[in-house]
Length: 141
Image (cartoon, rainbow, N blue to C red; front, top):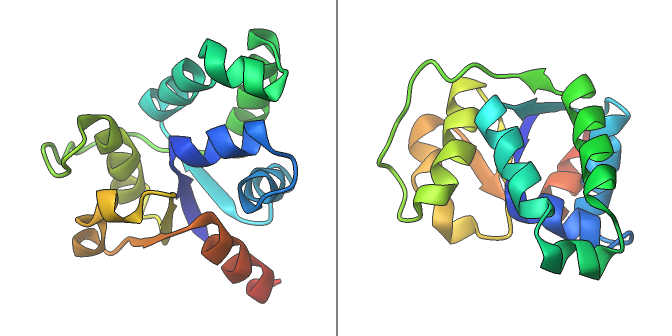
């Protein structure tokens, strides 16, 4: 299964060790599905995860964020953004997530904000919540 995680999923994973988002990150690190990333998406992850509010809530440092993202980059499939589909979504910040999913031929785009990615199914990408994605991965194991 080929999956792109929205930034909101990484934020939730960083802030809570017990939720579906954290499990999805752990499953990616163990190679249980193919996590897709692009350079712009990794830069967005870094920018958002390094915000003071998220660091304070999670108790991690910017260096910890760097270590996590290095680990993600080492196991993820790198997607080259050959085609940009902008503007497609209402929120410009979500465009890089959708573009990574489209260019990477993702099966799923995982987000808490399903309605924000209403255009994704036109490109053959299912939009699901972290819990739904985790259940799909577990069924395939």
